[in-house]
Image (tube, rainbow, N blue to C red):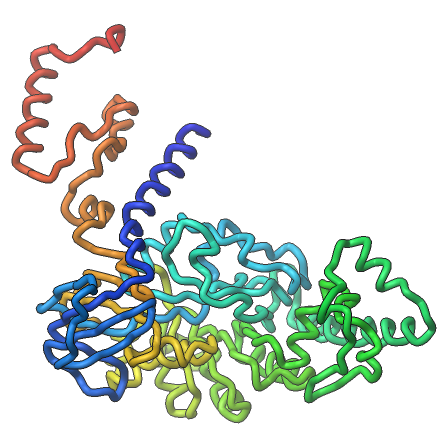
Amino acid sequence: MKLIQTTTRVAAIALGACLFASAALADGKLAIKAGKILAGPGMPEVEQGVIVIENGRIAAIGKDVKVPWDAVVIDAPNMVAVPGYIEAHSSRGMDRPNENLDIAPFLSVRDSIDPVSFYFEDSLRWGVTTINIQQGNNCVIAGQGMVVRPTGLTVDEMIVRIPSGVKLSASPKTGFSAATQAQTLRRAFSDLRRSLEQLVAEKKEGNDRARREALYQGRDLEGENAKGKAMEGSAWKVTGLELVPRGEIDEKLVPLLGLVEGKLPAFIYCGRPMDVHTALEVAKENGFLSKTTLVLSPACYKAAGAVAAAKVPVILDGSVMYVETDPLTGEEREVFVPGEFKKAGVRFALASANPTTESLWFQAAQCIGRGMTRAEAITAVTTVPAEILGLGKQLGTLEVGKFGTVLLCSGDPLSVTSWVERVVIEGKDVYDRSKDVRVKHLVGGQAPANTQAMGAALLGDARKVVCCEGEDPEEHAKHLAEERAKKDKGEEDSEDDK
């Protein structure tokens, strides 16, 4: 079993290296000649346009743009260029989420990101170019998230922004009641306040316990960390915190202090309508309502009015449709969730229901099918998630000065008959569908060379591998027929010979 796991891991790394090999184009110039450019919602379409990317950012875009003589050119006269889709919240891409501790804002998902996860491969295939990875929803206060690009062989190569915010949950985690969840969530901030007040009292008394503890833990007490700073925040403050050097504050408390001071965004999950009220109250009581984004299950459409009153954006987690049963008549009723938030005037971003068949493009297409305008649907997977993540000036549309992150689709990007053919992330040509060996295998039946044949173990020889590239189906079929003929004649090697 260990050998199989190791082999699978090596194969995945090799495939990742193949998919991302073209990232060597990193710091040069790249020109994309597209049949059509859809730069963003409400922006004019450009027929037979050119996008010039220099050092990762768009330098020029338009119909009559001149291609620099030293630029690498992607010639795509029959393709449509659009901005990359942005996943505003996902718990995928980690080797495992750590949700064993109730309060763990000091953890970072950076330590759990798996660069060779198939999730990142799938993201490129479906046009998702930027992902905010957060802890799962089964927590009270979880770790700090990070925004990544789904390309690179190391975590450092993938980073776009870290931290992206702290994940909280107003919905009961496993084993908790709603009351216990709310109590634990509120107690975390009351404990923070008491701890800070104790630090101030000890400093006034000349007690250097906090400093000795910081030195024992090897914390940095130089530079800015050696200075005290008055507490910021709009809800409550601890007077005299400027007496305590910031480096002496327990590292486990620093992220919570960042929330209260408005330095860190908060992402709060709500699985039920009643949880929305808890989330909004906790955020308001502790002064980070303006930095809060709610991650909502479909059932939370019932709290759209409260969300609108609080003026916070939301990420719609899961399906865009919610089916409920009338308790009196027993009749089923379908609710179009984004439509309800649109009516309430709530700014929302869509999230993938799964990384493949119901990725962001599918969610946006469903919204159009249910009556939303194309601009509104595209906005929910590009510009709104970019703004939620604080990346509105870098991503979401194709404009001069923004990141050169572009999808090249075979047709209308929201059509079921179109494919993402090429992906360019910050000027790097990172994905080419014509070279995607896994797609060739699944769609065309072309198995990669030197890999175990699917079902080989069931056929009696678990060691049998694919014998040729399979680029020519007729040649491969002929070869297999010859092998079968040999087997019928008893010419195959015996087990002893093997």
